[in-house]
Length: 429
View 1 (cartoon, rainbow, N blue to C red):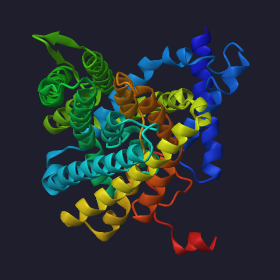
View 2: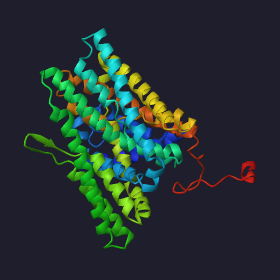
View 3: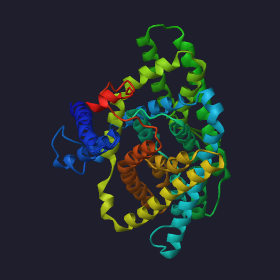
């Protein structure tokens, strides 16, 4: 009973908050996150009233499966952007920008936090500094996709952005695995090439392989059905299947095997959309079905944000350095790599800002980093940065897309259709 009431309040509360956000010209994503923050265990949840808010972090964690499923559908949707014609036109650009901006961000955050360590060793250890540098490379695809959807953004920068965000996950995974391996070696005195190099490559290869197989099987199964509703049901079933399979972990011969949820579901969407001639129409129907799921995802993400970290001045100091260095790294890395690949001035100026949102992937990395001796600081800094980036990032993404001329002016037409051009007669009225 309590869970059903909580889910209802999350949905209705998030949507009502979005009406207020609209009046303030803020993206709906920001409204959902604020609604979650209000319903979380540090505000309304603290009143300890059954069904109103979440009374503890554990109460939010009980619904983690919803967030995992939502991330699966987000990755599946982003995979739809990797169509062959799209890759032929800007695949080289996307790969170059995706890799270089992530590496530049990691290098800049590493330099800033290592300098902070030498200035005051009590603030942060070397191992935590280089681990945070790798975590900084990760960009949250969910917030970016939701802003693009809400405002029906389209254009060269939007298409490049969605490709870069998808590539960013694979690059971030490699950077984090390598950096965390080095950090662990600094603390233990022994470096493991298996952990630093082999396991992350295995995870990426296994994830892409599983996703490709799932995409092909999905297309094969879809051919047996012609009803739109049944094809939609099959698609939903396969995304749920890939989310479940991506959680499998095992060891064999001392080697850890696992999968990346985002890479598996993204590859499923990529293969399916490239071999299925009716994928475009089907993906549109999937998008409609997932709307309430995404609202829940962001409200729950807001409820997970820990406000207690704001009372720790050390976390705030390290977090401020991390946020400034990461923001500079994303902007400068994107600007430089865009200039290198011949992107337009508009894309060079604005792409980096759209890469600032950070959430689930970074939190997952921080959870792994807790094994370090100073791991609590790593997690606290990431929690603080997520709090800032999730509340500010969507609005900055909207502003950048608007400045790049890739968001249409809003009108009073159906949200499912682009606004028609306004005639001079209508303007006079």
